Image 1: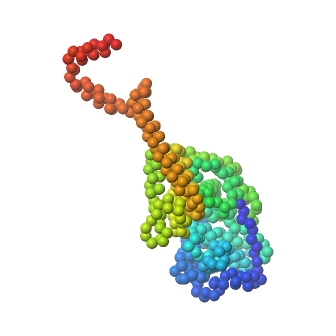
Image 2 (image 1 turned 180 degrees about the horizontal axis):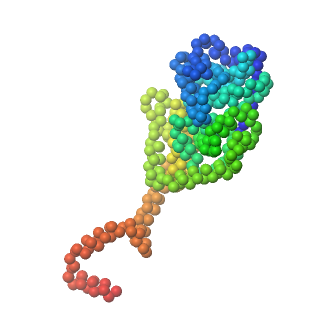
Image 3 (image 1 turned 90 degrees about the vertical axis):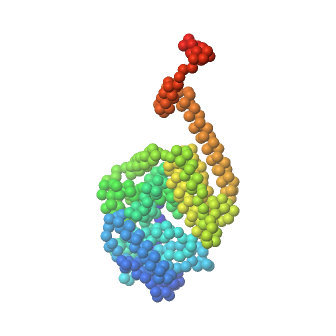
Length: 429
């Protein structure tokens, strides 16, 4: 889905508005400049500015590594760190200001610092502004009133997940969760901003998959870089934009479906057994979460059915949901719906929604007990069937039978009257 375009304004016409919205950037004389010189960071204290500087440079290095490009930035990026205003709770956590000045294009990135913003969200916003600079660094014909576009969310997510230091297999394994597979057209037009944590994880996996698919295509990396360069002229048809930048790929939709089917088929050959899945699920459910005060102590998952999570606990619940998602990709099909229910519960608890959660957890616990009992019965029956009911032997008990026959042959035959009678009857019948 193409993010709605935004206007480029003359900074001189809107200087009073910018000064009002970004007062801290002008009142605080102290600032930090990143090693490459591209990021000028205002606000907060020196250690925090240094952390943001290092993060921005690392993200840029990762993007350049994936795209196989050198650092040739032309537009400096002003990063303004500001605390969340109590009287303006609706203020977005990150806002990009794109303006045209007498000296050229200016990029200003306002980042609201608070305990609720996650490191992953900061990474996405920093990567977004870096890509905007790549898109417009050579667009000298920009005029006031023109529109500019943000890079698509899937591109930001996919490039970040494709970085050399990321755990790509774990991210991509979210595609193996049993669910209706999205067509490429559906995915490209899916708004990521409205997704919950579980769906967002799946969206991230699709984004990584698409970026890797593009990279693996003929001349993939250079074509992907060209796609980024041409985003300034993107249309409302993302599929057509992809075809224009990757002409060697004849049928994107068929390739997309084929690759996902191959990925799922390969994963299904390595599924866990019921007992292995149950054991790993028990390990996950035994995890304890940080306490409310955050100073020592811990709580179990059931605790959140009575209390709302703190920001630290919310992050822990989101990580817990991600681990359940990964387990579901390799889980035994019988337990997979149970794991998905636990994952949905974790996602709801992270959002502070704990209505009827206690009953749902109790029902899941009872269901797992019944499933385990039934699987034990199935194992017992299969063992009995193997030993007593097969018309032809499987060979599994061959060693045991040979040992038993050997022991019987070494026993002396009894010569009492009853034994002789039984031997005669055995020969007769």
